[in-house]
Amino acid sequence: MTIARAWLGGVAVLLSTVASLQGAEPVTLENLVAPRPNSVDEPFAKEFSLGQAAQFLDSASLDWQESWQCFTCHTNISYLIARPSISPDAPAHREVRKFAESLISLRWEEVGPRFDAEVVAIAAALALNDSATTKKLHPLTRVALDRMWTLQRETGDWKWPTRCGWPPMESDEHYGVTLAAIATGAAPDDYAQTPAAQAGLAKIRLYLKNNPPPDLHHKAMILWASTYVSGLLTVAEQKACVQELLAAERPTGGWAFSRLYPWKRADGKDQDLEASDGYGTGFIVFVLRRAGVAANEPAVARGVTWLKSHQRASGRWYTRSLNKDNEHFISHAGSAFAVMALVACGEK
Image 1 (cartoon, rainbow, N blue to C red):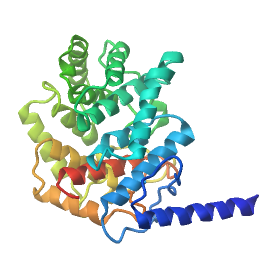
Image 2 (cartoon, rainbow, N blue to C red):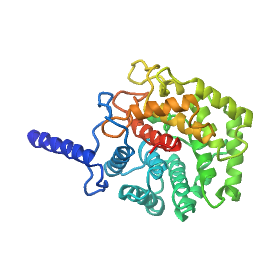
Image 3 (cartoon, rainbow, N blue to C red):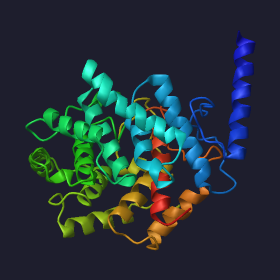
Image 4 (cartoon, rainbow, N blue to C red):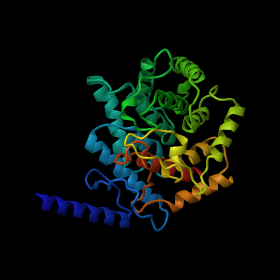
């Protein structure tokens, strides 16, 4: 049995390498080969390739979906937000979107969502996906958005799965509030003007007023949300946040996630506060572009150079977990944001 597993593992690696070299065959459930675990030791790509990035994102998202039968912010949610920036015309994209819709139309109707946070996250993923693809609000996206407001607490936030300890997405309620604001503002067909959305946004504004952002990542999330929803930041506050984000650039030309989101590691190890990474750099460059910062602004341009030179051979961008060194799932979200950042800066 051990030999058989080893042989199958070798075949999987070979198939993955072949798929990587060909780069043309679309990833499907039928030919899916799970990507190897995220590792700091993975070699860098010889040259930047959005095609390789698409292959990795397709494989990672389909594999997570098939293995866990659930949606998570760091993988499937980030995938649905990012994949259309390359192309929505991919079997994997259609499959992941279909799975998200089935959660709303089937599982939620039969047994309900796993968490309140699942409703917010899927509503955001589908709203941003609709906005980037059809430009029309899908009926099931509307169902998710409307359900989101029924779960909002009087304090303006949602019950969030903080026990996972996976910053920034599964660690505090503040993230959920800004994600809900982004979902609402991004949703097509003027969804933000509906009575339920207006009432919910009023509570969100109150929550953010009563709960100032504790660090740069939280500030960047509000800045992103403010590009969709008015009344979250003044123009002066937006400019100040942009300057803070620009000033946080590391000497290597990227951004370090560990400096954006201070976190005490569960494994007792020290955070690496110096090295730039895929999530920190991709997220900040993307948010700066959303906020209107030019692609040729020196710090943004250096961020683009860093991203293009630090893609891994598999097509991903590595990011070390802030929590444990066997939980580098943030690399999936980092790869998604890296793609969005590069496309937002005109890279192809």
